Image (cartoon, rainbow, N blue to C red; front, side, top):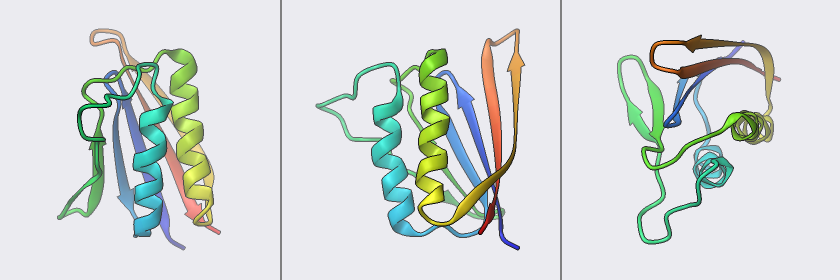
Length: 115
């Protein structure tokens, strides 16, 4: 059974997707929708952040260095990820969030299986 782990670190938002293969249209949908889910407005003059693929191990990563997510938008951000992945048939099986008090950064891990 294919598995997928999505790691979301806030602030600034950084998303890492590790595990099974994702379709290109799912990656593009995430790129488009995630930038709209932050607390800060999208930069109209700059380029939209894009996922970058890394090898060994294979994973996708996207950073939003000019953006911020308050508590509400963290939830919206995670909900957006779940919505985009569900369109490809991924089902959320487990999640975990850890807060680092020194850096004041939250890391949420979402674990999916393919339906």
